[in-house]
Image (cartoon, rainbow, N blue to C red; front, side):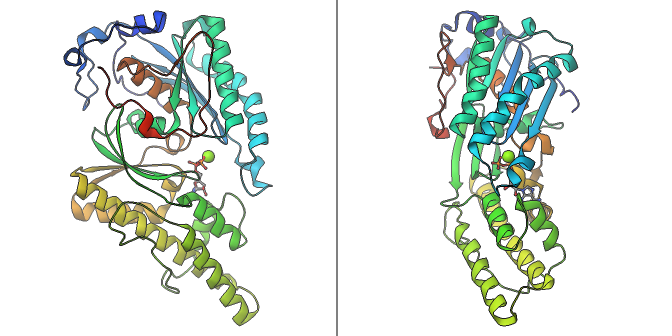
Length: 397
Ligand code: ADP
Ligand code: MG
């Protein structure tokens, strides 16, 4: 991945945080910065800060080094998806054990790739939650041990904040404010991202996540795990209009989603077709896949456009594995072009879980004085459930 152009410079104000973890709060006035181009104020400039990021909340192990002058220096990412495929979903215990084996070799590799040494690291950012408890414990244990050994501060980062800020690592990066559609195996959310630490949840799924719906529907059609890519491939062979499936909550008047009923509708349809003909033909399966994909894409597209219009924001950022779906991309592009909105898709290695977004979110939080999740005196905790709304929304008192 190419190094990102400098996003912001290091911080004199950061250093006291890094050393004492107790910084006299500056006035809101002096802390203001132009978030559109990430120009940090004068007193933030002059020092380069090197942040190690560690992600282990689910089935990806990610380690990255982010430098506040040069951008992303190196990252390592490993997906456990093949290991979990045999079980049809993520097995938490296996996920934790695999993270244990990956993190330190990944750390060695990012140090080699970046030409930096352990002692060069100024701070460590690690996913504290939400996610699988055991998996989170692996990353936080490594981070805290490293922090203690190096005498460097460790900051717990909210996984979703990592996703929301990750588009800023891409080249070109979108400007604040933007609407973020986060569509993964574990999340389906529409957020308004106004600035670092300023996130508003506009809507979310009330049951299954979009990726989960793809995976479960793929399983009903006899496709392997993860089902999203396989279902999308099969759908290209089908007729999206062969069957009319429901568009759940399309007209609910809010920005929430529901996908479990759609999965049930597919099950009912598949059973009906089986009862009629004894089995599902290849053509039936492709048609069902296309009809399902079209239904889910239509709901996502309509809600995204409504969110943009309602918030008066012109940019949509799509993150999460489902963002790779081609039908979703062309539908969003078409709808956005009609309404004069821009849609932004960060590269796939920044869309799925990764260490770079955690390093970056940690750097941004520290630079904006939002370091309240610093682990003190080697103590740490994980937060399997952690509403984003509990993050501090304002940078300074
Ligand atoms: P998580 O780690 O929360 O499961 P990821 O961001 O790793 O989420 O994305 C994985 C999810 O994305 C899976 O549910 C997978 O089926 C889905 N997915 C990946 N590619 C596609 C695609 N082309 N179409 C639809 N869904 C997809
Ligand atoms: Mg994943």
